[in-house]
Amino acid sequence: MRPSSLLTSALLSAALFAASLSLGGCGGETIGALVTSVDMADARARIPGILDSLSVREGDMVRKGQVIGRVVDSRLGYEGAAYGAQAAAAQAQAAQADAELERVRYLHANGVYAQARLDQAEAQARAARAQVSAARAQQSAVGAVAGQGAVVAPSAGRVLIAQVPAGSAVAPGTSIATITSGPMVLRLELPETLADKVHVGSAVLATGLSDDKGAAPPRASVGRVYPAVSGGQMSADVPIPGLASTMVGRRVTARVAVGERQALVVPRRFVETSYGIDYLTIIVGKDATSRVPVQIAPTDDPARVEILSGASRGDTLIAVARGAAGK
Image 1 (cartoon, rainbow, N blue to C red):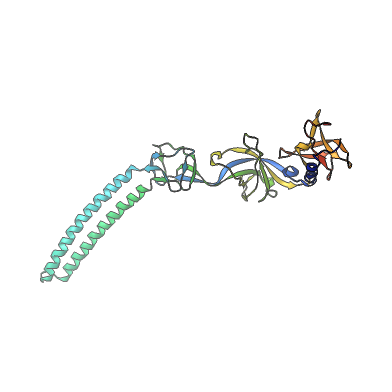
Image 2 (tube, one colour):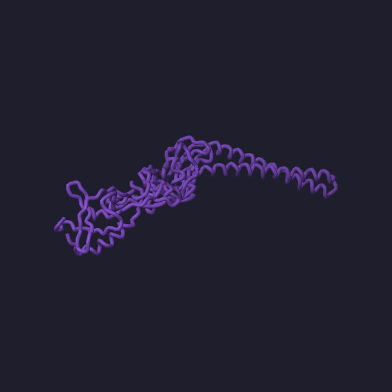
């Protein structure tokens, strides 16, 4: 077979063939991964009572500080009314003490009462006014506690869990809703044996995130490795552009690089398959080519394969057009 007009592209491919190095040419481990956000925020009840209302459902978007529910404690209403009555009684006593003070001052000015009697009346008036302030402060405190019945979103994000139905009794600290917080990441679940092999910058190929249109799986790198090991596993976060909060909780398969080795990688279009045998067309002379059988292995890139045997580094390949003579 003679080189055709495809020789130019073949020479370009030869450079790739001689130097290509991809995740397929690395030591990789297939592991499980979870689409999640960097953090999860819980909107919790701050007072005991009954969840009177919940205005969000799973999947809803919320903003930071948004009131998404309300807890009502009926006892607070009674306590507020009781303290209000105490404040009214104290106000009446204070008014009576002020009137008595004015009378004593008048009689003291006219020489009827001594200074000690005036001092006593002034002290009684101050005590009555203090009782009014105390009762009003207690009433305000009850109102402040009742105001804490509002369930507030601690961060902006998407509601993942909101399983407490309205009308349920809740205690302080009960999680009413769980909300995504921070950017979306792919969280790798790694065996602890890889603790010394996976680091920030390690290449990752998420094989479970490609769409239905046949797009290549997204490639990324580890952005954060968590130092703690729990249950024989460690975690690492991989930021991948385009991850949507609607995918939270989705489990996928990923490959992470744990080492490197040299490999001969060639575009898949250079390989011809005939009767179950794979062939490459190699230039062997100035105007001659040879069709040699090769052994190939898949890589993580569907468009490229690794050459295990049959060709050597530096060989010049020709991609034969499909249907061309001499195929």
